[in-house]
Image (cartoon, rainbow over all chains, first blue to last red; front, side):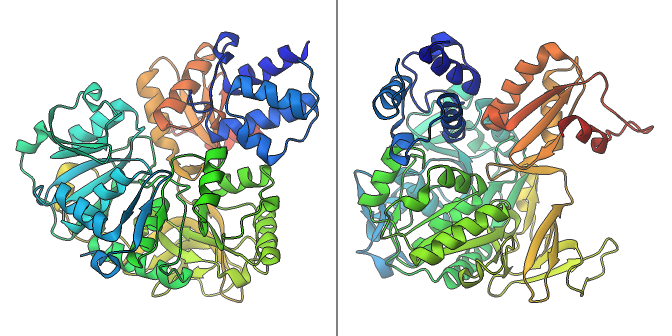
Length: 79
Length: 471
């Protein structure tokens, strides 16, 4: 699986959504991505990419696209 | 009058990211809204915003009785509550389309981002018990018609108790981390407005940058959280944040794990802050117990002692008081903050005091030899999920009434509900349904498909047998 596929899979598994729904998805745009869902999402990404995210990155992570940017810039995940 | 706003007229009462309101303005705004409404019932759909607080305080000060509900309450549940209680008015954020829920009437006032709708129920008779001040839901979000009836004396007493044990003064600046239709969130607003402090209102969550920017910019001095909030803060590695103005962290809404209790107590000790574990229920207005912060480390896992002018005792199955330490029994609380009782239908709003100052909490507790209490279990069938009380029988009933072709049983532990059903093809649907009806994140629900729900000869579900599936 490519990193992008893995990234998408964390979203679809954690938030119980389809791949199409991930594009442009924003925090709190769907009920499943509330603070509880956010915590599960971060835990999923940390496991998948074997990273430990910083506080600032966790709270800055407010959309599907922003997450790609954060993982790419700060955690050397290549997309 | 509940609050003496005149005493603090020039203090800031409320602040949001882009506006503020003094006590004088809050009083005027509340009167402008509620003065002409008179003694009647209003459904107030809450957010952490100025309009929502203006409504709440205006209603209470003017003897209009509000039922506080979440602005995000499922529309069907809202209509069913309205059909049960016939409110004369609805006070709701302008972005909420309550007509879509099937509620009819005319908008008679609009301000602070909120609308006041005079409903078509208002023609019906509107008698209310003279001491009735406020109604709150018992079960957060399942839309059960069961409400708790709180009197003016209940609110005033409990607010004074909280001000006393948390030593709240006019310099405090709490941030709202909880919804105000939730008794714990409301108690923070009540107690800080009592002493002329400034409540910082935000609907953003601790998982958002906006929240922390707001927190720092407003120099907030305290926040409150349910166990799940503390799990999130732990995950955020909160201990490393630089929050020089933060003085007090309070916790209620369920039992915090001993591990997290220890972590936050240690953090508080090292950083010179107070960490206060507390215990309460809507039936006692809000608060019944607290662990004085100086004991936070020494008494890990304890919810503390009774609040000032309150009294705890433990009783055994036959109702006799347990005097020995280390023996568990049902926790009973006595105090003037014990509410009037429940309501399940409109006529119940005429009822007087039924609890008579004494509340059987339904929680099982133990007392240590120093007199500190520890919650060890629960007598009733409910879970606390993200701080919300969720009645298991009510969820079962909701599922059965919408999915008649299957059998269902609910049990679980706090923050994790296990739903057992007998039809595998419906699992995803039932999970989504439960999440929608309760307003809780689907992650709280774990589905199990089994062949038969175990029952005894009388047809009662054997919940103990279900545990083997979820372990």
